[in-house]
Image 1 (spheres, rainbow, N blue to C red):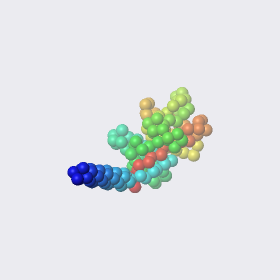
Image 2 (image 1 turned 180 degrees about the horizontal axis):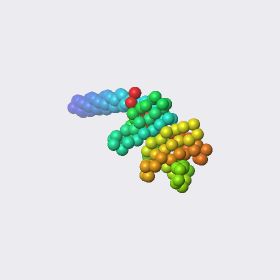
Image 3 (image 1 turned 90 degrees about the horizontal axis):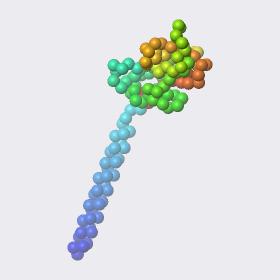
Image 4 (image 1 turned 45 degrees about the horizontal axis):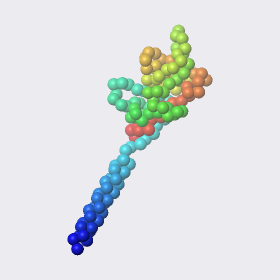
Amino acid sequence: MSFMNWLQRTYISLAVLTLIISLHSDQVIADSSLVPVNQQSCTSHFDHDPTWPNKVWCWSGEHSKHYCDEDSCISSVNGQSWHDFTFLNCHHKGLPVKKLVYPEHYHRYPNLVSALDRASQTWYDCDYSAAYFNNAYIVCNQCDF
């Protein structure tokens, strides 16, 4: 009889443990669904300021400005982090053509994008026709509503 009692206690203990694990995973899944996701395409402007910790401004139109998590921002073309996002073969009057511009800010226009190079802090114009990637923009996946 003692073997049966031991078996029953073990069974109940395992059932309670299974119940606890199941309830906890449901709670974790429920909590993760509460993370706000508001994707915005920065098709008009993009603005990063190092004094704003982990945040950027993303304009999806002239009057649609969104405050977004910096780490959620990627290239519309290849999905790279915005830190690795570049424009190619850009020009600034009086300076040689700059092969790679890593934009801190950009403004998109009908035929080109004007970008502030992160390293030199110089504005460059990057023609869409100069490189396929010059027509790319940043997409941020977690923005304020």
